[in-house]
Image (cartoon, rainbow, N blue to C red; front, side):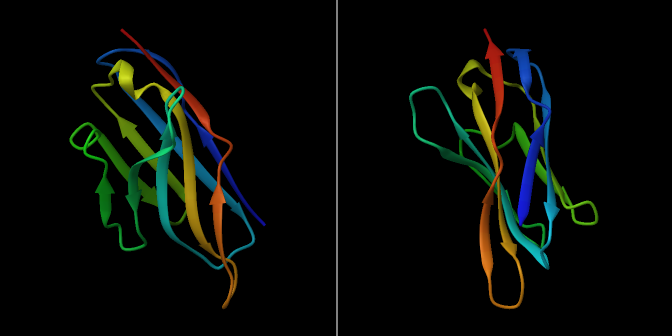
Length: 120
């Protein structure tokens, strides 16, 4: 019903930048909060940043000041601009969206994940 597709990952040197995108498609009424999560190798998945339908943002302490989350509601797309990247930012990054399917159903949707690798 809802598909989230991430793009923009890859390999970058420490101090560099990357921009991730997450495009939502399918049949739904509205997207509420969207978020980026990441899962470093051997660790648990953690929240990176979130943005609600009023464009209020929240960041993990480790990414505040370096990452910027944004969204284009007309395109149902969310972005994560990552700057001053560090090797510890290496992880699989996941897009998440809280989607209103109809007047009663809410669906927690996840993308397939995209690899970001920061070399030292």
